[in-house]
Image 1 (cartoon, rainbow, N blue to C red):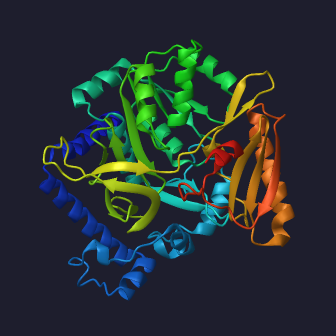
Image 2 (cartoon, rainbow, N blue to C red; image 1 turned 30 degrees about the vertical axis):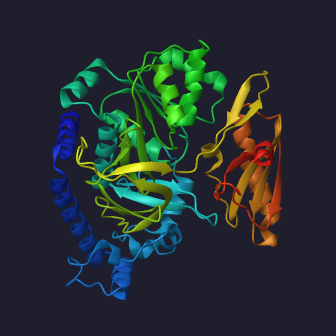
Length: 454
């Protein structure tokens, strides 16, 4: 029964792709006003900030969204307990749950899905979805993963028996992994999870034994699968590749389409809203899901308003990605807004030689989860064939020894999993992690050779 209901709800959501731009705009505006009114009524934080901006129950329906106060992640974390609309939720209790309960499929109080996000001050942030919001988000992700397919085509694919491998960071409360697991289970597919912390030597055996027909994962990880396929180390016949979690450049998209000889779908999401948009063809750009979110772009910055998560309303929440909107030509196949380009943090992998003489890598998203009280920022720099250093920005000198011990402990665990115990690394404290002089962005991983070349 759940399977039939999922297909019906997916069909209903897909109907929005057939609406006119005017019809979709009305739907989005109706959802927006419902969310704004709910936040004003049920969230102490929004009640207070709206009042300071001159927004009341009497006029909120007439005020443009740009008149509402914006919010960044720091303000979100500081005001978490006042922002959420369910009194059972608190940052302190969620942190305790995160630390004590196994990630798996455990839900907070058996009904809240908790996505972990590292904070800028070493304190974790949490994005919470109740069952209704989680189900709506999953439908958005499934629609994106099966983009451009009709319902008969989708049913035919599902009847054939999808065998899906998901390759990314999977051992924590990562939104992508949690959503992929629930989504794959929802459509009744067989699944194999490959964690990017697993040694590459184990990938080929698992892939060849499982024989997937769909791959989902970070573009950089999927690229490694493509290279293994080119070398003849893995054999698989794919009907679709679905990329997520990192930016997908045109060159990498072309490589993946060529090596796997299939369509490549690029799904755009964030912890704040895991279903934001989808791209199937570079020339079309990325379609943004205006029926699930309201996205504003000012000076290249994204301000997100979720239209479906009422337990934790996010209104004009700033996302660090950069986005440029495409102008309408009047001949688009879908009524959604389109993005010209999406610029997130695109990192290099750090490659080393493992204990058997093979190649092994450290992925930036495998180490991005360092969440240590007092650690303001950090950066990895590879400066030798088998050595790297970790720059750590710690304002309080008195905490440096303890933070060094925690970094060493966490890093050794990661290297041990990768069979890279012989790799040497050092922790060096610095006053500030500086951005790349060319891009103006801070990189999580870099090589000294690349910096000198720049």
